[in-house]
Length: 155
Image (cartoon, rainbow, N blue to C red; front, side, top):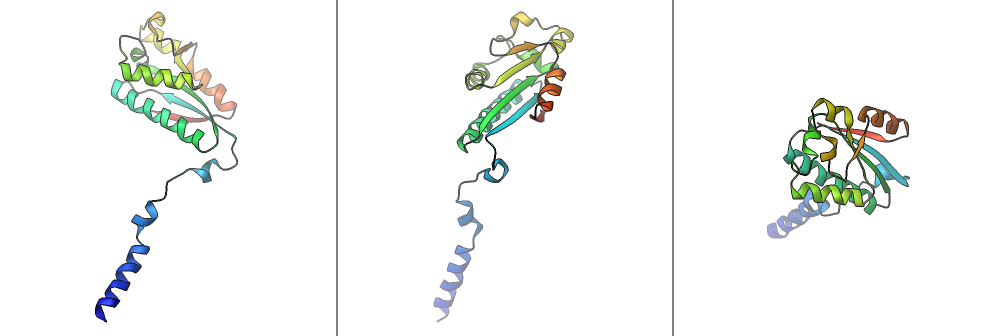
C-alpha cells in the first residue's frame, strides 16, 4: 500500500515537473503576433573583436529566428565609435567576415560612421566591402527610428 502511494506521488511530481514543460520548444509568437515584418536597427559600439563576433552571431540568430516564425526581418546594423577600427580587412578575422557576408547576403544593411572613421583616423578605403560608409550614423539612427525601426544599443 505504501509503495503504491509513493509511486502515485512520484508520478504526480513528474507530471507537474518544470523539466517536462521545458521540453517544448521556446518561441516568440506572442511578441511577433500580427507582424508581417519586424524592423530593427542595432547601434553597435563595442570595440573588441571577440565581442563583435559574439554579437554578429547573435544578429544572425535573431534574423533566422524571426524569419522562422513567419515574420520578415528588416535589419540595419550601424557601427560607430572605436569599433570602426575593427571594420577593416586586416583587423577582422575570417569568422567575423563570414558572419558579415551572411548578414549582407540576407538583406541586412551594414553601415559605418564616417564621422567616427575621420575622428579615429581610419582610412575609409580599408573598410570591408560588406559595410557601407554613411556620413553620420546618428542620422541613420534618427531616420530609421522615425520610420518605425526599434533601436537596440549594443555596448
